[in-house]
Image (tube, rainbow, N blue to C red):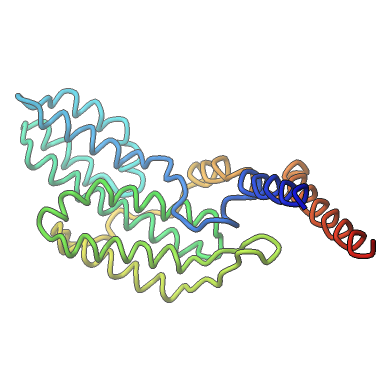
Length: 253
């Protein structure tokens, strides 16, 4: 009996360490840090120095300038650079917050367009939420209730993606209509909060570069086309079969 308990303990440890995470858990996953959001936080840190370090802020902005221009158009880039040139700290931070809102809109829009692609959608939602995390202190300081409501909507959006599970384990049905409702609530609230005239200006489809990034960042354990990823599952099945055979033989004896 003690041997059986030990075996089950070892089996549980194996499952927790080797079975794909999305079978056992349901979370945002690793946001992998949204570059634009990280740039904003670094810029704000430099601009909040005494005196504000506009030179460093500009250098940081230039690391994401091309991405912003590609996905949100030239206007946001020109506006932020003009703010920096005028050494207007408040305007620079304010306009960068607007860029973050546009980035959230971009990510959520891409999810809606690729809703049936679970891994891609989950990753993009994680990036959208990582972007909101950078905006959250500003929202919370003005309206704590709105901040909580937006967080709840992000969670609803996550739930709406469902979960394909693995061999039926952990499977949850997706709900695109629920996602659209959460998307609308999030974007309309942020648009009003940060006084943007439109969230559509400068929007572009997901580029080939971004698709490549998505593919390369895919969790290896979710790629069942690789033979090595079947090994833990085969070992798990073999272990279960062994337990059943052992139990049957013990009962007969």
